Length: 283
Length: 315
Image (cartoon, rainbow over the protein chains, first blue to last red):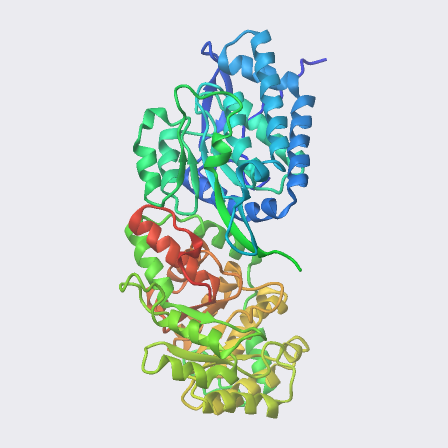
C-alpha cells in the first residue's frame, strides 16, 4: 500500500462568511518561528479590502439589529468552537510564535477566555458606558452607546492569537463589524480562529480577516471613507502615518499604550458613539 | 410589411419572406460566445483609460426609475441628479437620459428644462406588453405627446415565441410610426427568449422594422442583461450595419450595478463593433444604482481613498 499523501492547507481570506482566495491570485509563504516553511497564505490586495468593507457594512446592520443577549450567545458559541479545536490552535500558536507547548496552551486558554469575557460585555456595555442624565424637566434623558460601524483592525504583529482576539472581539461585542489585517508573519492562528465564526452563527461579514502585507494594505484601510474606526495596534512600523491618514475621514483611532492594563474597556469606549435620547416621564 | 432590398438584405414583402430570411442565419455558437466574453472580461484597464471609461459610462447612463411607487418628487430628484451627477465636481458629465413611465414624462421635461439630458419613456404596456395594439399605440402617443424624446417599447414575446414574427415586426413598424420624431428603443426581453439564436433573430426583426436601438431587458424579470447576450446583439448590430449601412444602437439594462460590470460591457462593445459605437448615441446603460458606483470609483481614482457610499444621493 502506498504512503498517504499529506493534505496541505492553503490559508484563505475570511470575507463575508466565505473563504475566498485573493482576487489578485497572489499568495505568500509563511515560516515558523525557527524559519521552516509553514504554509502558503493568501496575499490580499486592496480590492479584497474593498470587498471586505462592503461585506462588513451590510453585516453590521444585521449584527446590531440582533439583541444584545443574542450577540452574547453567538460570541459564546465562538468560544465553544475554539474550545473544541484547542489542540489545533495550540499547535499554530506554538509554530508561529516559537514558544513552548505549555506556554502556547496557556496563551490559547487566555484567548478563549477573552472571547467569553467579551461575550459577557455584549449586554452590559450599555449600562456601563451609558447612563441617565439629570435634566430640569419632566423627561428621562439617556445617553446610550451605539456602535461606530465598521472598524478596521491592524492586529498586533507579535501576539498572533491573544492580540488578535483582544483587537477584534472588543469592537464586535459592542455591535461593530470588523475588517482585520492579521499579523503579517504569523497569520495562521487568526485565520483558523476566524474560520470558526462561520459555525458560530455570526452573520457573514461581521468578522473579515485579510492576510498579506501590512504596509501595503493598512494605508488603504486608514483612508477608506467607509471605515469608521481604526485600531493601529499592529502598525507600529508605519508610525503615526496611519493615524494621520485616518484623520482624513475623521475615524476613531485606537493606539496601544505602553502601560496598557488587562481587562481594560478602552477599546469598547473607543469604538462606540453616544446617542442621547429624550423621553417624557409617563402619566 | 415591406423591407426594401439593400446590399445583401433581400426585399421582404410578407411574413413568409421574413421567416425565410431570418431562418437563413447561421446559429449562434453559445460556447464560443460565452468563452469570448469571459476572456474579454479579464482585460485590465490602466488608470487613465479607466478614468475616461468611467466618464464615458456616466454619459451613457439612462437613469431609470420604473416603480409603481414613483412620485413627482422622486422624478425631480432623479432629473436633478441626471443633470449634475456629482455636484462637487463639475467635470462629471451629465447622463444621457432619464427613463420614466409615460405619466411622468411631462414632469421630467419640466424639471429638465433646456438641459441636454433626454427624457425617455417606456410604453406599449411595459413591462409585459400584454395589451391590444390599439392600447399600445395610445400608450406611445401619450408618451410622445407629453414630450418624450425616446420611447422604450417591449416586443410581444408571446407572439415571437409562438412564431408569429410578422406580428412582432408589424407592431414595431406601427409603434415607430406613432413615435414620429422620437427615438425608438425596442426591448427584446432576452431573459424570456431562452436561446441566443432567438436573441439574434429578434434583434434582426427589430432592426429591419426600424428600431433606432435594440435593448436587452425591462429589468422586471429574473434574467436581465448579460454579457453574452450583449455580444450577440452587438454582433447583430454590426452585421446589420455592414449589410445596410445603418447603425443601430444597443442598450443593456437591468442588473448592471458595478463599475467593473459597466467597463466589461464597454470592452465588449469596443472589441465587437468598434469605437464608433462608443458614444451615448449608440450605446446606453439602463440603470439606477450603477451611477453611484461609477461616481464612487471616479472619486477613488481621483483621490486615492475609497469612498463612503452615502457620499452620493440615492435616487
